[in-house]
Image (cartoon, rainbow, N blue to C red):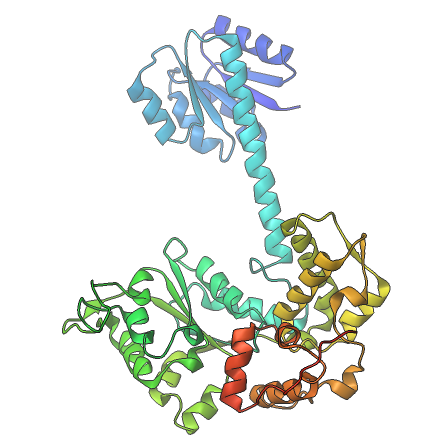
Length: 448
């Protein structure tokens, strides 16, 4: 039962309102002035306060800050647009003019109480989410993920450049989004750019913009992605794929907070917080001349390293359950469960494609499953022993990719191989070209 306090100096009106609300099932207390209400009750203990605007002594709006988060409805016989606006500006949730209709007052009271309950419920849910999932969209109770959450909370309020490291599919973009959402720039834009997805010939124009006529096809001036992130956060994923000329331009952004569009002689000031990510060894790339050392030292201020899924064993059941629940909703399927054999297959698989590969495997399973239980055959993880087919974990990321492809390409199609790696077929083809791994002449489909 909701408790309501009425503050009204006219006895007849106060008694009438009290009877009306009590007949509607509310618990009601009353006072004839704000001073009396303060002396007799603890104002934040009520669910709703209804106060006349003109009271002896202090005005009714003076109750608003005293009520803390309790909603306040202002009632007055001096109805005017100005007084209504003033009351709402001071924090009143609604405004009713005398003489009021009983049904109108009850409707206003119900609406105010419903909205207040909804706000409290949402606040409780948010507190629960913050407690269980400190970073929106990320699940992790293992020590390594808890450390990631602590790093995010520490660095987010600053403007420090963040370097997110981790294998493909570990959730680097989620870290960037969390840093942005927990920063003072949360109301600004978050612009995410996959550097590997932009052709080398266009990367500078895409990032920094261009003037009309700067190159063939530049029929008009265009702002770049960095300008689009002005006042917010720029996330550069796969920064290790950025060509050296573009790296030099990016260094200028970090050093002088300014950009120069392709084809322009004038610089423009930008206010951008930079978060970058890569699965590559940037330090080794610097030593081999593939990445600028001065840029590396500029971006390597605060590192957040994401653990691969194979090192997060205790997170796997909860993560799997959460992904499966979301996929069932997205694919309009009733809730599904994993069989004991499917869970065992998930636990013993090495997940080279990490969370992205796990999500892809579960999506495939949801589509293929014809009853309410997912079996290992729906996951398509293969029946081979992980110890005999999984490359050693001490390999570099590039060597790991090479070993995994060579070990599985004779038994999997390109689509299945890409899915197992948690990447697209296009990305698989590009990596084959980069590492000089030709496709087998007659690849066989996996029938297991």
